[in-house]
Image (cartoon, rainbow, N blue to C red; front, side, top):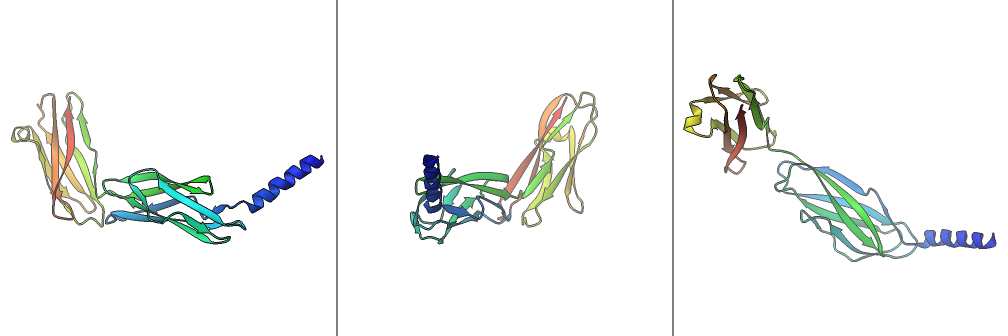
Length: 215
């Protein structure tokens, strides 16, 4: 019984004196703006013990992230720490996740990054399928992010030959652009696509494809 008490007291004393980081949150979530190329995320912690703590490193899980904070860092009791992470949003859309592993006095902790990146142009649907014998008109809806400075200018089927069999027209509605695709009623089984073109925010030509499958 005395041995058990001594062991319990030792473990309690160790837990009280062990250097430890207390994080405000181990998960940081952020939504980027359309114009953001790099997004900064900050993890905040405090040395919650009564002894000095050494944070040796912070390493990201992928090349899309870089750690801006410098390591190693020595923290006195009660001293605060910031781990600043830069997330490269180029070429990414939707919800993206990553990890940062922090090594503090041989204890490794995992921090989670969640970045939501908006889409400049959304086409719905990207595939149109007609059943055998069905040749009704179908619609593609194009929505652009309100902060996007580009344009949607034209919609056309991929070739002049296809244009004789599939009519394509584009109309501007209040909150979206509609592309109407009208195949000839006697159109045989066919695979083709519609090219929707415009300019990005830098004036560079951008093209998007909608695939058509006629069974």
